Each structure stands twice: as C-alpha cells, then as structure tokens.
Length: 178
Image 1 (spheres, rainbow, N blue to C red):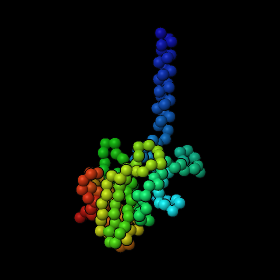
Image 2: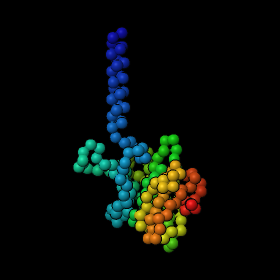
Image 3: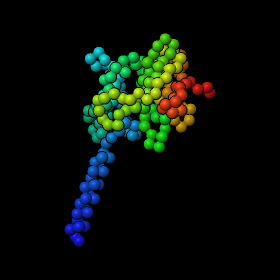
Image 4: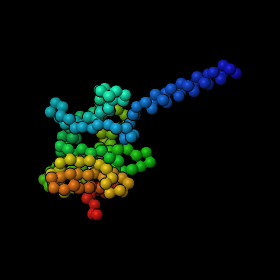
C-alpha cells in the first residue's frame, strides 16, 4: 500500500512540475503576454519580426518568437502596424493589422499568428479598403466603448476610427458614423 501511495505521489509531483514549467512563459500569440511586433528590412525585403521581452532580467536579450519573411508585408506603410482583439471570443486572440497605401485610400490586411513559435507566414484572415489620406500612425483599442478593438488611424489631418467587419469572413472595414 505504501509503495502504491508513493508511486501516485511521485506521478502527481511530476505532473505538477510539468504544469508549472509550462506556465513559466508564454505559449501562444494573443494569450495576454506582451510581444513587440515590427516590420524590419532584411536583405532588401520587409519581414515581420515578433519579439518576446526578457522574462526575468532587466537588460536581458529580446528573443525572436516569430519571423514571417513572406512577401506580404512589402507594401506596408511606415507606422501602419496595429495589434488588437478585433473579433472577441471566449478564448480571445489578437490579430496583426498591416496598412498599405494607394492614391486616396488605404488597404487593410489582418493576419492571425501561427499557433506555435516559428518562421512561417501568418494567415491572412480579413482584408478591406477605406478612403483615407496619408497615414502617420496606426493603433488598436476600444475608444468608442463597444467591447471590441477598432483600428485607430492618425492621418496628416484627422484621427479616424475604423471598425472591423462583424466576423472574420463577412462584411467590410468601415468608418462608423457617430
């Protein structure tokens, strides 16, 4: 009986160790852990780089967690990168939005991260276009109190809120009327 009890206690301790080790750092994008996403020029090509900050050291190195060297970011506007939870759900995740420009309008592309740390393309999940002037910067947040993130774009003349489609697969990105 004592041997059986010790065996069970050992298995429980080992399982607890694995669980606690798994909780020590982030596992997936959009799980509430902060990352730094940038579009960087590497060998004449624009690529997405996502970094994780040092976990326990003030001056430790930032770790590269995702690299997407596909051609889908080549036309991105400077300052045209935002991250937000545009389609809230029970498990919620954040999406990366990249803005690219053309005469009198911006194109919007929303991407979903792969489920693991890797160097592969992110999935394009939503696209749209909005008539807008020259973009200075983009961000995401819930400035209107609607319970979901919206794209907030600063142009040379305005601050514009752009609402995402109701779902990933339907509707258009639009500038709501207040």
